[in-house]
Length: 330
Image 1 (spheres, rainbow, N blue to C red):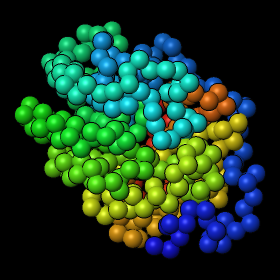
Image 2 (cartoon, rainbow, N blue to C red):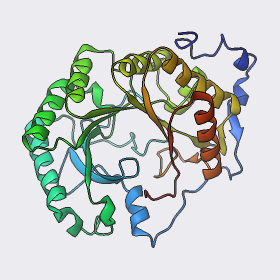
Image 3 (cartoon, rainbow, N blue to C red):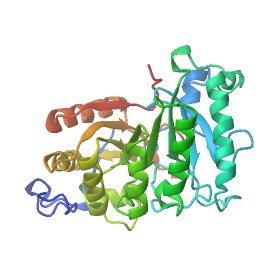
Image 4 (cartoon, rainbow, N blue to C red):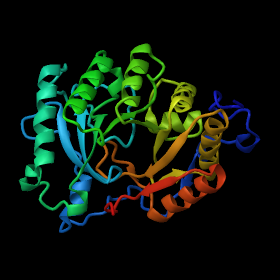
């Protein structure tokens, strides 16, 4: 697998001599780039609103998703806001204390049934927050395990995935995807592998986070003690069994975006996964669209996102979908 398990880049001549101060590429933006505001465009603002709070629900919430191109019903297994990453771009403020510290699975399933009924009946769009959703996007695309932390860290992850899959089957929602949005750190654990098998049998899809190509940049952006080599190994293992979607967020930190060498290292990681037998369905390349917890973080300019996307397509030969901070899904 070459240097797939050596994300430090030490074995790569392309990264030899790379100094820490060169990890970023200068962006043509101010020190802290403001998120674009279009307050009169309710459709745009709705894409920006991914609140995990809906009605009186504790665990289940609907959102209009740019990447799903429709309504995604999220399941938050981390209402306690505990996560094994502390990404600089995360919208969750982990300095606050959550009032919910565990998961009541019976209540979660009741909330799921009620929320799906709202979406499928069309009554969701009577809610002022969803009234501006265009007709082509008034469709249920998926049920997604996401939320305020890494869903696979929840001890009961396998049983709850099994219960949600059974509920989806009972409601004859075979065309609705069951999506896991994950940082891939726990995909090697037996109970998570059990859940992945359930996903595979339920029109499932894995969206695995990969924000960096080098260990140094990975630790700067995702701020975790878990090594990048575990993430890469887990993505490869999962992608050998089924096509995996890679989700990557590019940003400006203190006015600086990823360097050319960082993007080259990132492309090399993707290439190594493919060369080792991994199946990458597509890469979702996006940037900051909501206010992050760290003030020094801002969105990467649209032209930079497009340029990096073209580099990935050319060097790796895979599909890249790009979502900039101000776009509405077509």
